[in-house]
Image (tube, rainbow, N blue to C red; front, top):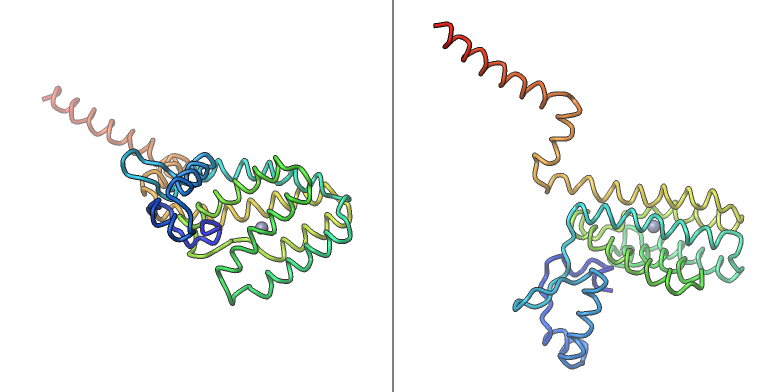
Length: 235
Ligand SMILES: [Zn+2]
């Protein structure tokens, strides 16, 4: 949960004894819990150094968003036209809570945004799907915590509301499209910012190649060298 709210920063150390004390459990239970989180990719266990909040790379970040997209499209496909009145009410009041928290309580906003996606997954009644969605949503929170604005869910609340409308209308195709666009927008708002932190060269290289500058630059260097050599030989 602390990871979802982004109050634990990627790379932060997680000492077993402190966790045990905080939650009133033994070190063994704390270790087991950390082991489980490591399996889910949320914690990194380093030999002789203990546990740390996982710090996903940009590439891992992109991979998580791809998987999340697939899983959540499956979720809305299952739910379209099958939501009970109670589920619809629950989702609408959830979106309302998100609107109320928006701009006022950032940690709560971030948590509610994540919980919207978990609520949808739980409504499918497919426990495996719910488990996987929970895992990717938590991983996305880590990515946002590492690369996004501080305490930012990057979820647009209006987009959540539109997804609920499409589900209630039983329009699976629209719901899928909306979910895909929503998650693409989340990824795009989260990941380009990475570029400011990433190695500048890695970021600029693809653009330079696309613009033909690298190749022509290399060609220029080669050409100059060749000319020099030619001149030398000529002399
Ligand atoms: Zn969202």
